[in-house]
Image (cartoon, rainbow, N blue to C red):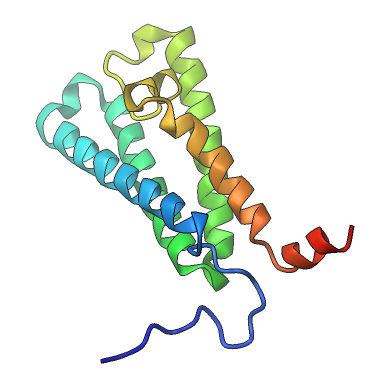
Length: 148
């Protein structure tokens, strides 16, 4: 039997997967599975119907997978988590605006269409929460909070 290894032996960075981070990682993981399943099915069965929409769903799936892994791993993966959550935020805003502004360009919905309306707007809220959590668990965040 092996014990779980700490994120880094001398790292004073709070782990991104502790406390509320566990819920965040779980939500990202569920969304990663949902987006991957959706994109895989769409690409395999109806790619020619709406290639842009289905490729965007695949991009969303990859972003959610990266965010899930990076938030779970923490430590050196924090940079990947920052980038993943930021790309997710830009993606859901850009695709959300584009899908509302030009519905004809999106004959089929994506994970991020309508700002993630098909997923209860979780894709819109999640990157804000993820970025907040990364900020909250940044190095020395606890020290700054107690020195006021």
